Image 1 (cartoon, one colour):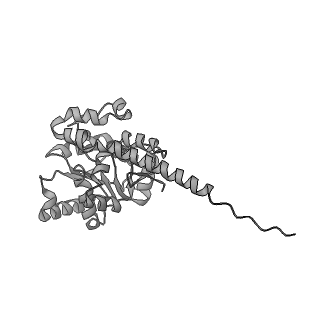
Image 2 (tube, helix red, strand yellow):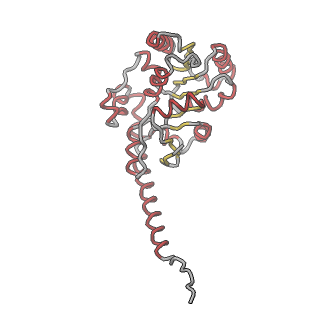
Image 3 (cartoon, helix red, strand yellow):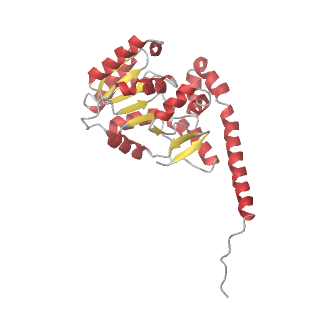
Length: 268
């Protein structure tokens, strides 16, 4: 699969249809890098390991897609977790092999999402769900309880909505203990959206790269630091990557101009 380098992260250049087809044929672990992920990856070794274990890294941000265009290596499509998940269950509406477990969201929210999705699909495509308590990832007994619940559900797909980087780390640390699960999806706030607990941004804002602004206005106390402080160096880093790429091409051109081509000796 073709990848595009954004701040030393290899992002797969896939369309939604290609990703859905690959998942059904091959399975795999999907992460959805956005600006926040790319900044966290620069200093979080555990998240870096989770990304190394992932099979698909797809662009979850119009801003990251714009950055790829600025760098001269455009990504063909933005595939956010909140777009991927409904597309995935719609794609597999009549596929009896797809049985999804939802892990995440606040108490009762995952159950609402389960009910709404199953009602929409006309079958129990979501076989079970669980909303873990705060700090569960540090409690081995709780994690083992969750793994047993997933296994007993008969799920072949695990969709985890715990927020980054917790969801990516949890999947990477525990996926080998779930041999019956073939597909792992890190989907962020998608369970909240599916339940109707939180509103998604209007489509025009998402397409314009303003989904972050909608989320900031919806949850300013929780998200102001992420969007207004932690993510702002992204733009300078992208400019530096562009500058380095342009400099390398220029130096390569100069080097080639000073290396005369070999000339075949002519016979008299």
